[in-house]
Length: 246
Image 1 (cartoon, one colour):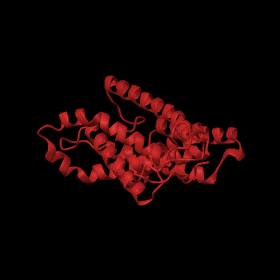
Image 2 (cartoon, one colour; image 1 turned 90 degrees about the horizontal axis):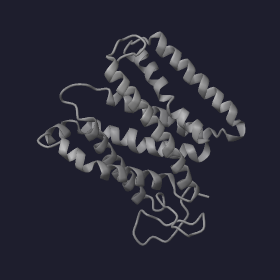
Image 3 (cartoon, one colour; image 1 turned 90 degrees about the vertical axis):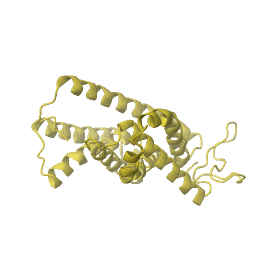
């Protein structure tokens, strides 16, 4: 992983990468608004996460299969990384984030998530001895200052310790995401295939957890009063309130 404050990169790829990073951050922030609306209408964090992951995996299936033509052995060799990516980054990250925005303002939850970048800088320095450059240090200081400022603006009444815990867990998931994605080499899965595999693993894991705990992935039916929900984990379940829904 190249330190932007110390190394040099070609302007073309760097500009494209920066644009994609901004687009990714923007779309993720917007998704928080939609997710918050779902949670307010009676969806549980697990239900929202399963729907998001399963839908995304379905959309990526055809492109991923096309990229894997003749290279299915590569997927088998990289199965361990795909499983870690799916469980920690995809499944864990979704649940952490959706639980965080249930008890924190969306802006603060997103900022806590992107604190994971600061964790990466610290990990690279402590474990790999990669000392950050001045630009990177300045970015870390600005990130911490921004987090402190937003927390102060939110007020102590809106700062839930449980929500902060979920937000920091999401930061860890984001750090794992970047560290796994930074692996380079000819034997590495294409990014789209890694994302598709992780989405499949994450959706399957959350669905399995939901089947073990009926009602954990429940969501309200349209037209029903808020607070009532329909279990999605087992067919024929009686409606019951999802844990944590109002």
